[in-house]
Length: 131
Image (cartoon, rainbow, N blue to C red; front, side, top):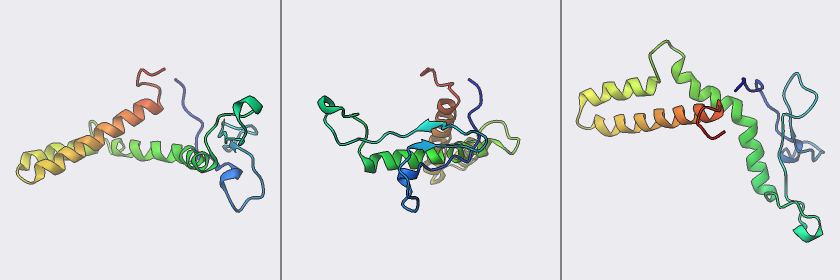
């Protein structure tokens, strides 16, 4: 899979009360077109042309999540950026485990977080086998 469009990604106008526009597009610098669209329920039944999309409140939450996606991925990757072999959280977990006793629980939590970050990065990079 190729690299994603670099951030920052804009928040769609429909999710921003300070903008008098209801467009559904998430944009990025360097592109005139949208990199994705967040759909919102149009309030009609399917039989009358309804779109069966998330209601406004949920669509706004989706928009904020997509808007933050590049930053969230960078935050996960930052634990690999200081030249250590593997995730810094995993390295810290192993050190705490050596201390034993009350540090075992903390070590387990750090290991959980490292595993969650690894899974999120793999998913974002298309390496989780879902595609």
